[in-house]
Length: 359
Image 1: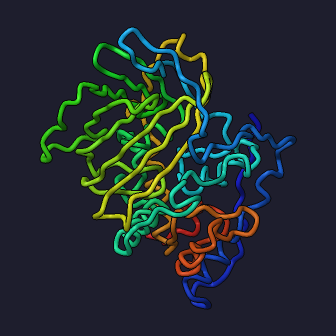
Image 2: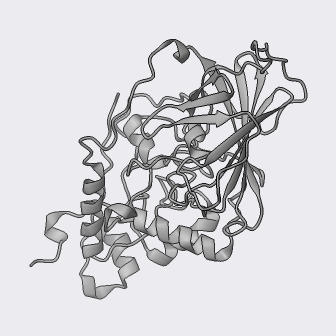
């Protein structure tokens, strides 16, 4: 895979001659053209997610117990928008240059209510989310980095929007295996039993499933507030309730929809949706990924954040256009203007030794 350096252009400027915001912009400048070293820019994600369940779907074959057979391995690798980084924006453009990928092939929005809109945070909750994004931009401690980097269990629905899962049945239960780092296995009772007591909170929630026609419906309560919906500060409280719906459109296509309700954080319930294709992965072993073992990335990110803070750099982990340095989402530009963060990247830039305060 071709690699390209993301190069910061430095412009020397005496610290005392400009406000901090102007210093940040001018000293570190904007990154170079992100695909300058790429001989070919690829577009690996071309299909569009469904935004609603089609009127006509197949009637899947039934298992001996009479359940619609949704079993198999499913992934969203062919679809243009990925939810692993941001369900509102897709993947971070800062990563495209390194991978020589077309930025448009992985950017977009998974919300279907409000349609391609923003998560409806209450004002105080939105302010808290921005605090998380500021901490992620220049972390000062391990807990400032996003929950996925720290190998936290992803939670629901993040474990599915990561992009790949497998479904299996055992007597009385649906089992959902999620692939990738921090992926987990959910065992969903289908017997109509009640949820556990409200005082117990779980990283993956307490799921209960049932069938509505050909659709598998899973309601998860008792969710811990330690998980996010993605890597972008999209938090919730432990009062969150998630209802997921899996429906086969045809033999090789699955429509997935999740409704999130948390009246302590959001102004109203909201929905996201994705489409998954059947794969042949079910014929292979489900590997155990290492995440904590030998992990050094978090400490490296914290060191970079501390160096940035030492010279007064602050900002927000907001997706930006790599050519203009402007926020991808115009309504977020005010945060960039407020912080005066260096143009071009959603993380604090590398601070060379010679810029650091001398001890």
